[in-house]
Length: 86
Image 1 (spheres, rainbow, N blue to C red):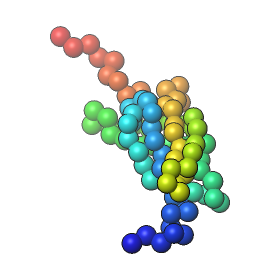
Image 2: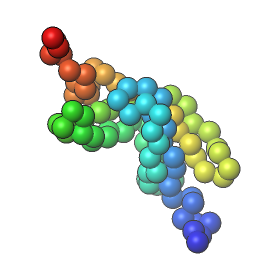
Image 3: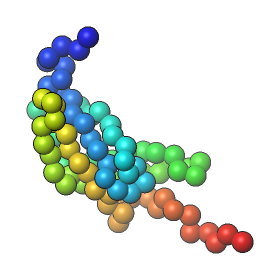
Image 4: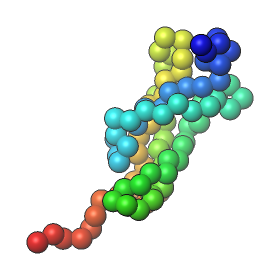
């Protein structure tokens, strides 16, 4: 069972668009605060790619911080194939 103190050191990150759209991640609060900008490493098409996400908003959901993040395509690795298919 998780202690109440453990709940106060983590938050839920929700990815609202981009390659990780619809996924969530449990992340650690630093000095009691969530990150305004986060990076995620993921394999897309068999290659590892680095994706950057920026905070959209945050709220409390059942006593835990819940932060929504938007994809920053300009600073992230490309994730869609640019090759044409026959």
